[in-house]
Image 1 (tube, rainbow, N blue to C red):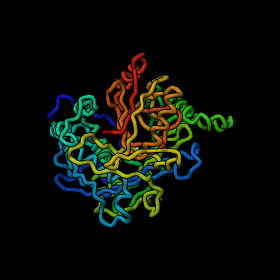
Image 2: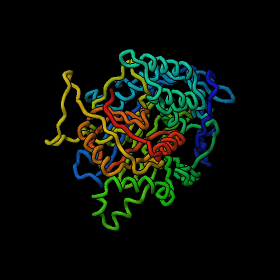
Image 3: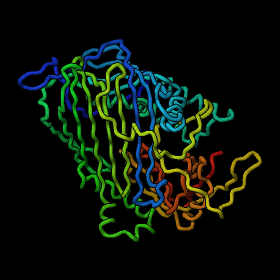
Image 4: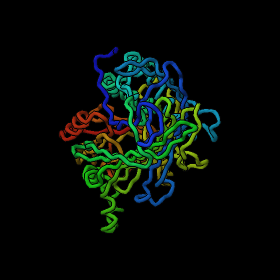
Length: 490
């Protein structure tokens, strides 16, 4: 390894596969994962996200939105021994051949292209366990060097300022390079879900359940996993398995109460009119995962996978879809409608390509609602060169605290502004719809969000995987001299 900060990656994976493919009176035997060495495999990947906030928004265009992407990725197992494997992934943001529709309607492809540009790579070499779960990553030093060069040669040749947060991102990648894998090749983990070097005999239709605990902001949430061998195909020599995972509803709801309370306060006027049943419904939360896997009875590899993850919390629903198919094998799983529909309600979001002079990993961000139309009373003066002239606003903080993210496994810093500052922030975001802005805490840039819709209610939410960093921000904002500045990105 080239970096001293490697972390081991542990992933729960129920052993599915077995020693010799055969049908017997005792059930169906699936072989342990034994991939061919040096053979490149191509995979078609389709993805989509659906967000539904219709509970809070009356306008259809703002309440539900879908984003999608289509990719063709290639994987080669370079070597394998008794401890693990070395795997190379060749990555591309180009749309595969035969994809219908306009290229700019695939927002995920545009975002992914920026990710590859930011990291300066189109290939990753991973060390995995014998199931294919990523453990380590090679070439992190080169990726970090590329990012440092980008920072040093920033836009217009001006180096990125130390307070811009760029170097904080680089330090996190050095400390945990597996964040790069999660951003660029999450397919590796989904394929590994259906693979195991061990072997087992399974009965068709017989379910096998296990449980584990996951931590959500200090709340231990039991998660139940149920595996079922659904069917086999003697001609194709495949087995189809299903995995259903469900988080305990009561515990998960408990873990999401701080975030739900913040959401309710953000829609305070609408929340006043909720009935008791509606309010109780808003305070409930759930999380589930459904996976179908087609596994080879020749070498135990995953040939096709379809995954749906659903998180409902605070009257909102986020659902993500992923389908992977090895190109040399026929498809057998039924795709969700969202992946096959010709007409999708996609976000009205223009994504600029990231030139080499810019910096910052473009991890596939969750897409939000489209820009709202400006009010007639709103005035924005253009500069001679065309861009908007919108004055920065200085904001006062009423409260700041770290809470669990309602739709992810991380944390968020929830900032509540004073009423006067909330009004100033709403006016600023109304004028800046469609623009990239900067949020500064004590003169340090912490996020650079694109404003997609006016922000009401006086809430700012900062997502960050480092909970310590969020806690430090929260403590800074409790100081008397603390200030937040929001401006257009220079």
